[in-house]
Every structure is written in C-alpha cells, then in structure tokens.
Image 1 (cartoon, rainbow, N blue to C red):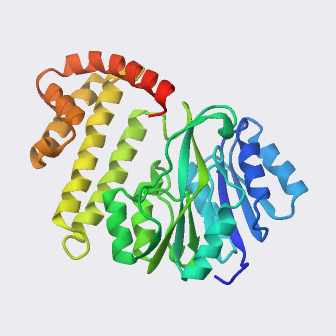
Image 2 (image 1 turned 60 degrees about the vertical axis):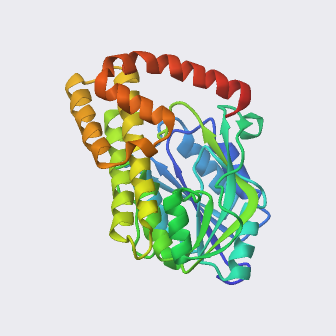
Image 3 (image 1 turned 135 degrees about the horizontal axis):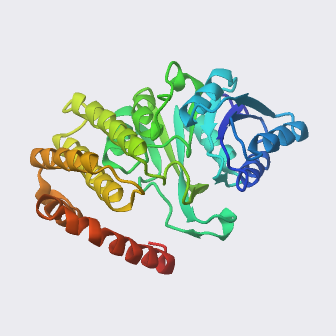
Length: 342
C-alpha cells in the first residue's frame, strides 16, 4: 500500500438503529480521508438500511449494498467482493473508531511495510454512547512492535493477539480467496488464522483506537443452541490448525494452551445453556455433558484455572447443583463488574 492509498472500510449492518449513526460518524470523521465505506445492509427491518442510504447521499465515499438477511459472514463477504481499496478494515456497526484510527494504522503499514497492522481496543458495557460506557483496560496485551509470520501466529495461539478482524488493517492481498464461513457465527475465530498465515510482517501499535461495545442482544452475547455449536466449531477449527502445525510453528505448550482454552469454552457453554436457556433440551444437556467429560479426560485438567477445575468437578459429580449455583455466581460477577469494570 502506498502512502495515502485508498482504504476500504467494510461495515455489516443488521438491525442496529440505536448505534449505527455513532459508528458511521466515527468513520466519516476520520483524519484519513481517502476512504471507501461499504455498508452492507443485511436485510434490516428497523430502519438501519434507511440510515445507511441517508449517509450515502451525504458523502460520496459511502456505498450501500442491500441484500436479504443472510448473516454476518455473508454481509462481510459481500463487502470483500466489492471493495476496491489497497487495504481493508472492518468495523462492527455498534462499535466506533477513534478519529485517528485509520491514519495511524495506514501510516504504520507504509512505514513498516506490514501486511497487517493492529491497534489496541477497549470494551464498553453500554447501550448508550460508547464514550459514556465503562471501559476495561486496553487489549490485546501483546507489546507494540513488528512480528514475523511465525511470531504473530504464536501470539494468536497464546491469546496475546485477539482472533477478530475489527481492530486490524490488512493489505488487500492477504484476503485473496479468503472468505468468512457463511451460515455460522463466531466467524472471526475460524478465519483469522488463515489471514495471519499469509502475513509476512504484522505491526502492533500501542494506541487505543477501537471502541468495542458489549451489550445484551448482540450476536456475540446471545447464546442459543445453534450459536453454542457454532462457537465450538470455530474453536475446533482453530485448535486443529494449531495441532496440524505443531511443532513446526507452535510448541507443545502452545497446543496444550489452545486445547485447554477450547475446553474452558466447552465448560462455560454447558453451564450457560443448562442454567440460562429459556427452554433447555435436557437430552442435549446430557449429551453435551458427556462430550465435556470426554474432552476433560484428554487434557491436563489440573493445569486449568481454579474456577474451571471446580466447575468441571461439579459437572462430573453433581451437575444439577452446578446449574443451580451458576445464576447466583453470575449475579455476583455482574455486580463486581458494575462496581469495578473488571
């Protein structure tokens, strides 16, 4: 990418009317002006599509794609098929950029000849404006600098780089022939490894430039049986990639870490579905429990953090008690979050 080159920002839009204007304003007000903003309205029914059209009339950099509802992956793929920029960024429609986000990442991309640049982000638990929500410390924890392909992949496996696309700017070429899996959620997890695998140089900058919203009702924070299965599928693809490249890229320790992380997700998903689903399927709950127990036998459970070890032991010997206790634990955790932001 040349200095000042065109950057395509892809924004999938589906029923986010209370948040979309803040997201779009954060893009239009970027200090980096050479932008192509692709709004993919994925069959919104709440007026979000009309807001997109209004912004397109106001600013010639905005292009709107209307399509029937096909899901987040299909919306992002539609943007990838139509983008013309030298570099690609993704913004979720209920999040926002710092005004210097694209400029800072584009400058680093040119300066370091990087295939990907990623910035830090903060999480904001709010349904109002992001600036008014309580935020947690900036992530990801990886130190600023330039990383080669192997080092970046290892950081992704370690969890010091987040497996999401929205706080990153990538050269167009690394996305060649890579698309999100349609019909599934948690699409970032199963796609990021492939993108990182094509990057010779990954630059991490220290600025906090992306504001990520956490809210009840979003895709990420809604747990249905289908989404739970999708999350586990994405995690299994991630784990299989690491296993297939151990020990040539990843260490045995990193493989164990990924497998343990996948197991923690299994335990958490069982607890969530069994204790909080509106109409839980008891047969599925028991089949799911057996799956967790099989996975637990294949890893070193003693290396897990204490709360996961306790949950796993309860899942083995008294799952009913675990289902009863978790809602109480969840209430306490939410109270702590409101008080401390942690």
